[in-house]
Image (tube, rainbow, N blue to C red; front, side, top):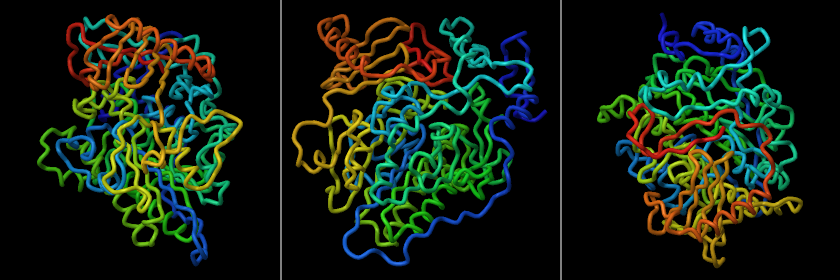
Amino acid sequence: MKRWARILLGSVAVAGAGLALSADYIKLNLNRWLSGPVAPNRAITWNQGPEAPPAGARPPNIILIVADDLGWGDVTITGKGVAGMATPNIDAIGREGVVFANGYAGNATCAPSRAALLTGRYATRFGYEFTPADVRVPGWFPTSIIRPDALFARNIAGFPSDWEHKTLFDEDAARNLPPPGGKGVPASEITIAEQLQSRGYHTVHLGKWHLGEAKGMRPEDQGFDESLGFIIGGQKYLPEDHPETVNSYQDFDPIDRFLWANLPYSVQFNGSPRFAPDRYMTDYLSHHAVQAIRASRNRPFFLYLAYNAPHTPLQALKSDHDALAGIKDHRTRVYAAMVRAVDRGVGQVMAELKAQGLDDNTLVIFTSDNGGAHYVGLPDLNRPYRGWKASFYEGGTHLPFLMRWPGRIAPGSRFASPVSHFDIYATASAAAGAPLPADRPIDGVDLMPFVSGDATGVPHRTLFWRSGGYRVVLHEGWKLHSLTQPAGDRLYDLNADPTERTNLAAAQPARVAELKALLATHDRQQAPPAWPSLIRSPIPLDRPLGVKPKTKEDYVYWWN
């Protein structure tokens, strides 16, 4: 039996008669439902700009590079790098520009975070509170719902039999979801691409989207002139049996098993049918970023380069894996090799800017969508911070956040006050001369005056995060986690305790009350979730998945 058939979930408990479906059935059928047929590789012809540059000054080009699940500790300008591996090209953006020492994600999982980043607003303002997921299956499937709580059963997830924290599933909500593909950023939102399009920019999306498939939600409908990538949340990096790939399987993680069995290896170009890339996915996206820059060298452009690395499934290019022979642990080495490929791609983008004479007139921003994920099984992704992706502890939201603009940002700058993903929207809009929308609250602010010292004060006194019954506020260095499961308040003084070790809630009831009042006011300004939370999953704070739980360990429940 093939490996995917051995490991895919073992068996999947589903609604109805509790039918156990074989891995073979899901592999052969669910994959077709998720991806559709995948055609052979096809050549990409990018829209060519003018043959000569325009006369006079032109607005700056803007490049936004977003890695997927990259932790604070994975980059050497913010942490120590994966097993000490350097990231020189990513580091150079911060070294030649500014490092935001307290840069925060809009959310702790990928899709809501990206929704905030691209709209300049708390995604909860328009109901984008949970990562889009659909547990319904096509009509030909012998049951109507796959139960995520069964996928996370203790015997699959690697938890000991006496571990009491279970994944909870809302079956009623699952049966009343919006149409598949209809969970995304609504067309009424004004994206950063639409902002820049209004100023004559040519706009390009490369890589991951994960913000809706329905009409009006796709990148081509949300301000991007050209889009090459994938609409769902992930893809394989190469076929699993490709001779140039080295795979790492996290057998303790049910999500990993599902991804190996069902993720395709494909992209779309401007909404075309799916086709296969011609190389390792990270390198494919980097290659086409260079081509898109070359095509737009004589016009202002916005490039959103959204890598899916180093998100699972863990697949490294063999040459990168071979270059890291000093890393002995297989999983760590594969993960590090994936980060190495991202760093190489960043270097290729920056080299092309120099080659085209665009380096001095381009604002480059690098960040991650959220912190490193506990389901990778590696302990140091977010060091020194506690927590992971899918928690609002610093490990889930405190990110590498770098910005470079020669002549406008002094090399070696460091900015200490908290900033957020949604500030990228206002910063890019100001750089392009695009007024912010006046018909809605925009939560982001232009960071350039703060970086240059022209603005006094701080960009934000207060930041908020929310996912169902889990709400967090950061106000002037004090951070409150308000949870309904496990019920209670956790208060931390980040000025003295940046790694959130000492809960001061019992000792500071007045401050807890003050911060809860801020949360209540913020909640009243947000929209109800546009679709319901389906599952609530326990996230341990101090260990990755695959490591045996400790007695009375700290955890939070994540709503999704």
